[in-house]
Image 1 (cartoon, rainbow, N blue to C red):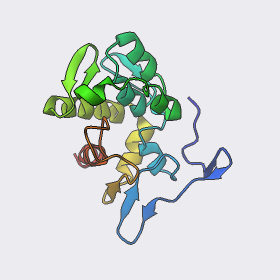
Image 2 (cartoon, rainbow, N blue to C red):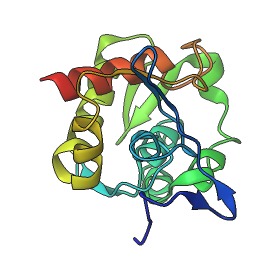
Image 3 (cartoon, one colour):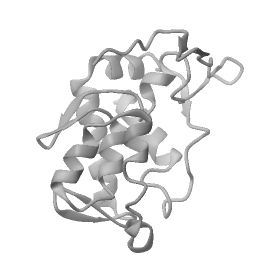
Length: 172
């Protein structure tokens, strides 16, 4: 997939510098300058997870709301807004707090679910060079995600879980 992560603008809009030099933090943002844009879950980052081809982390995350392998594979093949929008009609998980991967059910609040997320990010890190390089370029920087949700009851990954997974992966 052709995508210029080093561009200064996209679709006629300037990308934002989300690095705060005063407190040495990088706000991960899809419309941020490199490396913030690459680290965004929405960015296209091809990898294979448990035999399923994923076009982005967002595609993988959104697929967890669906307990249908065929539909999951379809959603995993998306990135950007398409991935985010793909699962809007699948809201049952908000009531049950049950998410799914390859017909296995996960409680949203369980350590097994967090382990699943960690495995997916690790697979992307190991297989996708641009993601790995972007994450490694942030060594010594605190990662933040100001637009991320904070309530695990309403998001498949909170901004705290997201930045912790990335930080742990980078600092290993």
